[in-house]
Image 1 (cartoon, rainbow, N blue to C red):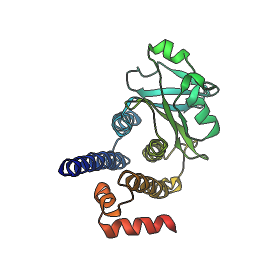
Image 2 (image 1 turned 90 degrees about the vertical axis):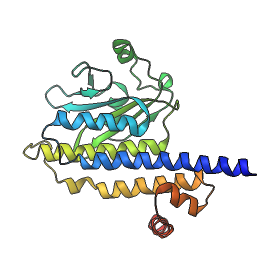
Image 3 (image 1 turned 120 degrees about the horizontal axis):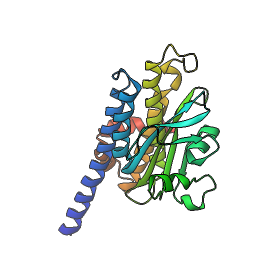
Image 4 (image 1 turned 90 degrees about the horizontal axis):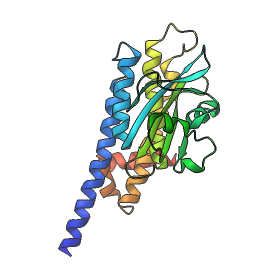
Length: 238
């Protein structure tokens, strides 16, 4: 019985560490919005933190080029800047851009929008993909994409995380390009607060599942007080 109790405690600590780590990375990303003085200085920490956030092997930022009407790679793990430019009709990145919607693909070989030529060019094997828009449907900048989760697949809640990252990144890009006619919009228009609330609810739901519905344990996992969790659940129900 003691062994079982010890095992449960250990599992709870692992789950707590897992959530706290993700929340830490999201907090660090939110701090970057007004900091960098150039797009490149913004891309690098976003790529690095997103890679850790999703336990992904690679993360890439593609920005739409209005002159060529292609998606240009600006920064990616293990890929040189400018190495890839994709027509918007190609790849999961192109699908995400055309449909202005996130996409999760855990079996690329069977997906009609998978573009294997990129794997051939970069000598890499893509096993799972998560892609999300950078910006809003009305004012998109590009697409952020994560490849190959160390767990072997990306989960839906991780796609929600990537969506939030895309919105945060677009906030930073908007702050850098307020004089641009093609991307002149207020940061508030991105409704980041709504995305954060959505993410909070996803994390709460997952914490409750992981702790068998025990709200006291779930509050500990999330780093909330019991009252804080109660209020969060109430917001979710309203």
